[in-house]
Image (cartoon, rainbow, N blue to C red):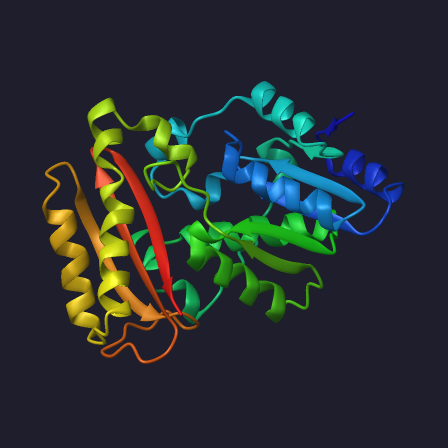
Length: 278
């Protein structure tokens, strides 16, 4: 039976009696098969599994984007129950950020390019809320999807620098049958945009194929990605990146592990995706 708690005190009381180790899946709700894969791994690896459901206002630069974010807690709790999650932490904003809260966790260089440049303040909001949640749950392991690859690197850096012992584990991106990365934001796509959206993954795969065939120029790989995206009228790219997989510095030549990534708008909906070159 999945238990739902809403306060820090209730969470601490529930965790005090929970068998160790604890596996933690932080989410913003509107759970999907990608989240299910994280829950399944958390259950498999640990004696107790915990999921948080909290739409974090501090990681949204645009109030309208925060308002549009899909929410359905009852459905989310039902999914957690189906996956055998032991504990759901579903706090209010004031429970996470009590009155007078005045601290921000700002991760350095890894948070600056790509999503950090496109969404100023976003990773400060992510790092701050995850630091709070890691402190409250005190899990041995926490699970994140690699679709948000830069977020994964930011959280690992934050945990390492702040001596948080929770191990940060990244799991593969879960995709629809046509290659589109599963995302809570996909619900906002119109039928025409949903039909067009697989071009994002297709563009990255075209560049990855060129790399496997021997192309090592990062500019050439960016051009391959952009050319595929340009063939889809509904796709409006924000950035196309070929970067070092550890630092996210843009590359000139791909002669070691690298990350292809892109952010693409379809109407008001912004989708991100990536593909590792290893």
